[in-house]
Image 1: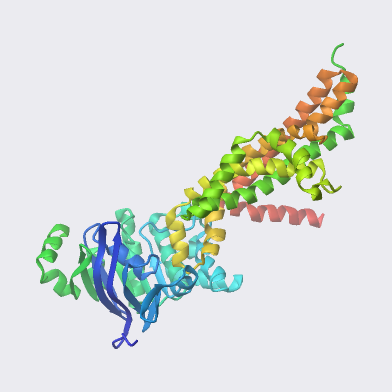
Image 2: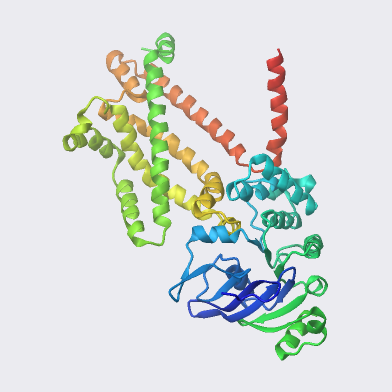
Length: 258
Length: 244
């Protein structure tokens, strides 16, 4: 089952998903190399978030395969038939993939430190002191060492999203998925989150970022993808994508956001 | 025959009333615990997608919401031992019968409180827990239940107060709880005002204590760091006291 090319970390093959009569993903193929940052742009309702949720194994695809470092994830093949993995097995695989949500989804009953510690203690079975040390270190990395005792309701949106990034990062995932991480933020708070993400990209983290932030796509992404109507329309490096788009659909989309 | 303060105070501090109050509170506490456990699983069953699980849970809620608590208590004490010989043994006291009977009725109501509390937890919370690799059980115990508890707490306190009052129904199965104690005293002395006033005072004290407890627990669910700030001060205080 060697689906991997050199340096490839994740591959998505012919992924399809429908909700009722609405086909959201129509056979999506793409791969991402280790250390690469891929920005996915596209209009609302084009299926970008669904794609990320399938990659994070939070939902089952109707058809298609996902591979993480050579290994099929989310499903298994038995005598030619593809079977979805049960929730318990998915839970183990999900630790390899970090996910950051548009609305942060921090746990309101836990302070910043305990939000980050929770999975370390309950999933990775680290001791409390070990988990605390790791969580403190990662919160420091996102610039929140002063806020460890604060609860989500006491943090700004930007700080909450930075805690959410730290919470995903602390499990040492092989890839980080960001689902419109700055869309729910006030404009003045977008910068601090993008800074954290740019720093993360510089450390060599593999990232897939669904975003409307052209600045981030230009500056930090190795590849920019336009996603529309359940398919990938165009993929290119930022320079070509923004200055010399090949498809009419891309030109039209860029004319709206510039 | 005016108000006799001596009778009033003698009864207020009598062992009989204290025992009655303890029984009333005891029945309420144990039946609430049992009702919460049953209610939790009924609520879970009612929120699953499988109709084979959902249907019996719905029937359970329908049945026990419809039957008067008094009738359930009479059935528990009089009818059940006729059907199940094990219930004719000495361990099956009016207290146990009252706890089980009230818990069965209460669980139907608690299941609705718990169901609405569980449903009020944002879907994104479960999604975030799953994304972190947490198993469904861990998501439930570490994320959903702690958040649902905050929602369920005020109505559960209401139910608890209701149960303390419902425990007076257990007089029909010869449980000598608070109100029965008053009634027995009245039957002997005809001092209605003094005996009933004592009962009122006991109920007021009990419900005040429950209200204070509710406030205390609700403060634990504020989810702010201000509470955490108070802890060192408290520790310091108790530390000083131990030095003295």
